[in-house]
Image (cartoon, rainbow, N blue to C red; front, side, top):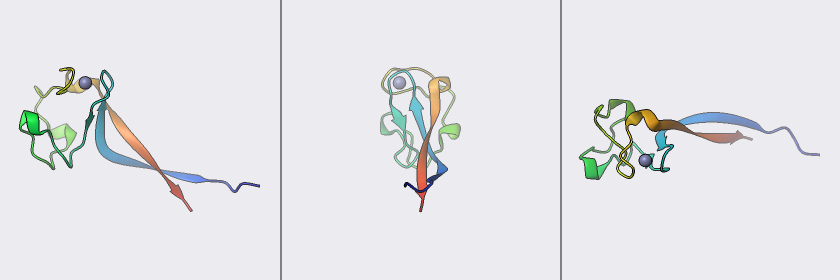
Length: 70
Ligand SMILES: [Zn+2]
């Protein structure tokens, strides 16, 4: 018998482009666009675009991870 597994949802602060799959990670920033590490996605300039496909911020979705409770 398996025991019940509990998951905890974590907001990684990462945002994923749903057009091309590029992931913006605030810990890394976006060097090409002159975004320093530590800038949350919400604080990116409105004219910031996906470095791969050039789509706007509106096309990004929240990337969540799940942690398993023991
Ligand atoms: Zn993209």
